[in-house]
Amino acid sequence: MSKITNFSIVASFLGLWINSFFSENIQIIIGFILIFSFGILHGANDLLLIDKTQSKNKIASYYKVLMFYIVIVAVGALLFYLTPVMALLLFILVSGYHFGEQHWQRDVHDNTKILNLLFHALYGLLILSLLFIFHVSEVQRIITDITQVSISSELPFKFFYFCLLSFLAVSLIKFFKSETIRTIIFQELLLLFVFAIIFKTSSLIWGFTIYFILWHSIPSMMDQIKFLYGSYSFDNFKKYFKSAFYYWIASLLGILLLYLLFRAEHFFDALFFSFLAAITFPHVWVIVNMFKTKKAN
Image 1 (cartoon, one colour):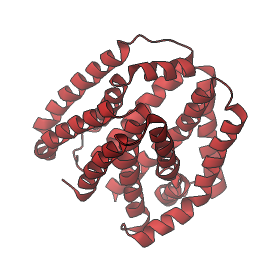
Image 2: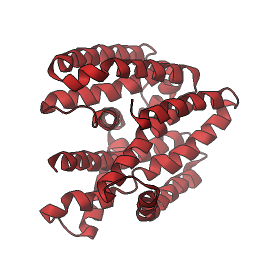
Image 3: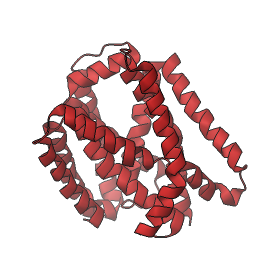
Image 4: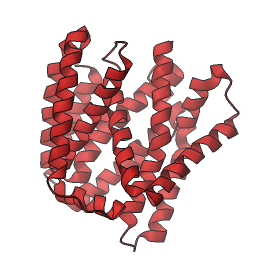
């Protein structure tokens, strides 16, 4: 296992230890602090990444890139307003692929693009579905708040079984196609068992926080820093933080504004979730292009 994987495992079980000492309300507060810090920060350098990935193609100026990014965010928010069911489904699919791509990009190196896309998406969706089945009632409430549509308690389990069987089927194909997969697949299946323990014993927000911060955001920031500056070091992290600072603060102010305006409304949770989803869409596009550029180089 890599050093970052070992760190994530140890830190995850430390998170479970914290879970046993604090109430669910305290866990939610700590969880949101971590999401608003590391979670938002890991996507706050997208414009710098765009400049890095597109500079060779002489794409438009910084301000045109900024406008393009804002338009994507606005379109994402508009989708949640006009067609919340389709927007939520799209968000889950995109997030699943994003989680899977980040987790597997350093380990899987074959040229079967469609199979890789399915593999990454199904892995990330399996993680999300695993989280959903241990917190069905909360998932039902959030979906109803966002879409105004009620779902049955069986749907998250059907989704989980579909993701599990599909992922195992694609994994079996890659097992015979990729020597790299054969050396790590059982280790990765063991990690899924670790995630199941985390999600089962934690609240929805705390379980998601442990995965999102330790298994996604921190590894993603390390990959971004290596891509931007050539290697990961504390000095390079300071450069990364400095360049991301104003965009990070702008995102936090946007969330704060939503809270101040709509905290008394029953649909605040849906509005907050929609805001996070809207800023996720362009971020995923940026990271996909970053990985493509890394492989090309």
